[in-house]
Image (tube, rainbow, N blue to C red; front, side, top):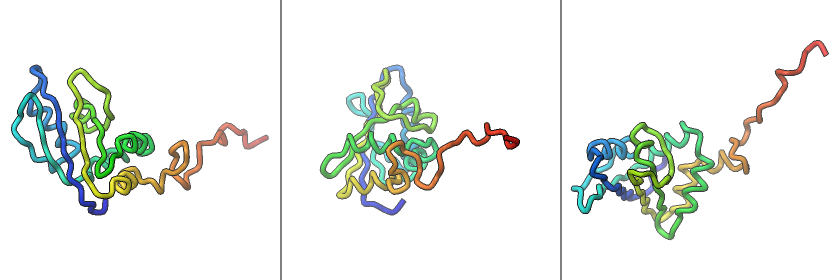
Length: 150
């Protein structure tokens, strides 16, 4: 991913039954360059500068089209805001804001070019069909059901 000038702020509530180290691991799985502050008011805060692993996970999970819709909903002047499920992040998965019982990881991507960042994260130019199918790939067919003897 080209180097965009981004500042990523991350926050996650820490419940009394949770391990702080597991919440840190969940954040590090998607934002490995995260630098953590001390926990205050029951909230873990961190900052990061790279979206590379997050982008890779969107592609590996084949959720770029859906991600684009979620990220565009969080588009604000100068930043993008969205939430991620802690449990999914702990197992290297992206699952957008589900208001889970453990609370979500709130992600704020600060940048002068938020729309360009969304386009790059979601490979907009490769996924511009309404159903999210990559341009240039054919839809599945039933050709294998046709008897070649007919």
